[in-house]
Image (tube, rainbow, N blue to C red; front, side, top):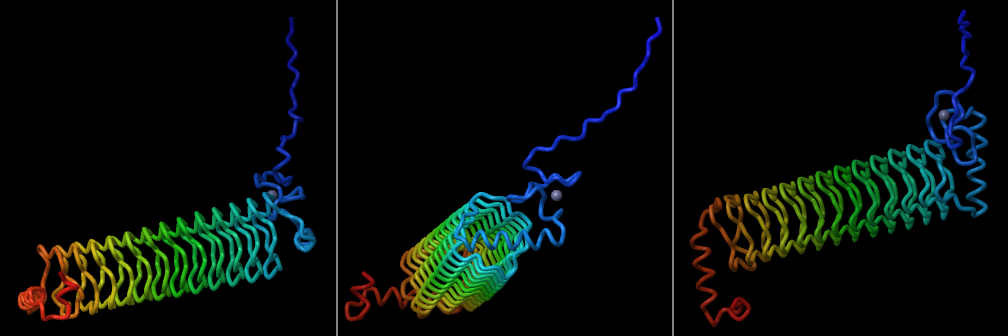
Length: 341
Ligand SMILES: [Zn+2]
């Protein structure tokens, strides 16, 4: 019996899930109420799509959870828009108004948000990793638990914003304004903060290990129990700052202004304090073992009670200074006698 081979032609075309862009070979998600992704929309298609989105926002309708990834909306008025949980990754919002917008849990990773107005917006738990916020205003914005790792926030305004427990590791915050910003338990490890303003900032238990804080203003900032392991604080201004129980081991504090700062119980093991201004500073029970103090003036220090100087590189006249303090303590006529008891 002869076997006849019938050639089988594969006529079945690839079946795509309805959520995927219709363009052949594209694996991107479809844009909200479109059959294509942004990349595969025509020039005309993009123009009408942008107008449609603007109309939806203008009508006060929400865009929660929708996919708008990659779209270009520079200069758009999106104030008070509801974009919570939306996929906005890789979008261009430069110069747009997103003030008071709801962006909770939104994905804005790798987005262009340069010179954008985002003040008073809610960005709680949003993914903002590697986004560009150059010269952006985030004044008073809510950002607890937001992911800002590797983002560019240089020259931005983050004053009075809430960044509690936010991830800012390796972020660029140079020349940024962070006065009265809430950063308790935030992760700022290896962040670059050169020349930024952090006056009266709350950095309680924040992780600033290996961060660059050179020439930063931290006046009256709360850094208690923060981790500043091997951080660079050279020429930083910490007038009246709270550094009680702070980890500063291996930190660079050369020429750092610590006038009236509270360093009680701080871990300064192996830190460099050469040329640091310590007038009125409280160093009681601080650990200064192996600390470099050769060019440090300790004469105006408010308290050296219980300090551990084991293995420290001490300044000239250190023995006399300690003897003087000892004599002061036992002299009832000294005005500091009762306070030092
Ligand atoms: Zn596509």
